[in-house]
Amino acid sequence: MAWYEKTGAEHEYVLSTRVRFARNLADYPFASRMDKTSAAEIVERVRGVFPDYTYTDLADRSPGQARSLAEQHLISPDFLAVPYAHGLLEKGDNYIMVGEEDHLRIQSILSGLALDEAYRSASEACDVVEDKLKIAYDDTLGYLTHCPTNLGTGMRASVMLFLPALSMTDSMRKIAGQLSKLGLTIRGSYGEGSEGTGYLYQVSNQVTLGVSEEDTVAKLAQVVHTMIENEQKMEKTLFERQTDKIEDMTGRALGTLKYAHMLSAAEFMDLYGKVRMGLNLGCVDGVDYGTLDRLSVRVQPATLALECGVSDPAGRDKARARMVREELEK
Image (cartoon, rainbow, N blue to C red; front, top):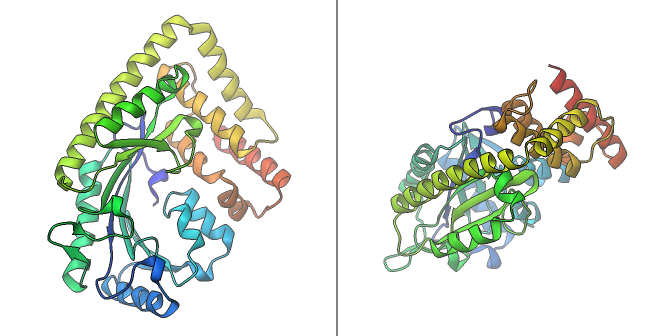
């Protein structure tokens, strides 16, 4: 069961937690100098380390199937453009990209706030790799990675947060500056270069060199708790000052989701954020967090096209609205 089909801790404000390790095999060149033979060998060697994992060969998948995996946050958007052998290994909450920017991207993705659990699960998978394969490592620089920004631990820990009130009050720019001073960064829901659609943002560590994995996880957890507290305070303040406006906004959003016959993905995400805020404030009922969060993935263009068998934009908009209506009727 994927992370978005579950409800985790602090689910009102945290959709998911991810801990990812970048690792490279010592006997092979980095991606920029990779050839097809080396890429294929790496895939086979890594698959041999994880015989009980399910392997998806992305070279055999359609562009839509691959984009759907990115929409589910199981692979990076950059993974779609890899020109040589590459694929996804998965078991439970662990997902391993083989052949991305680094030879291995070992990640654990859990619903809600679960940094310790995700760190432990991803670390265990890393230990298996390092026990059976020779990994590129330097006593001074730590784990060697394709991009210098990942040198050291090679670990990125991130939490996907729902921050409607902080977004509405134009606080995100200030927050980004404060996080940068702490060695953290904030991005849109699909990572670098994306926007915070649906008031969703990823907060992650930016520094991997000269800091321990445990300290990184602890710092991120502390910052996330602080951001949740700030969001709660801002929501309360906004609601006290603009009760009628917010009740109208959230109620209209829910009404549109319930009765619309055409919905674009962008419009859905806008309405999703408003209705979710209404749940936090007790303005709306007849819907739950789990249903909204599952829909936020299922209605994305490629995922929707695969599930409903439609590919043209108008057909997707009709199918999206129908899916939302049916789910909310339940």
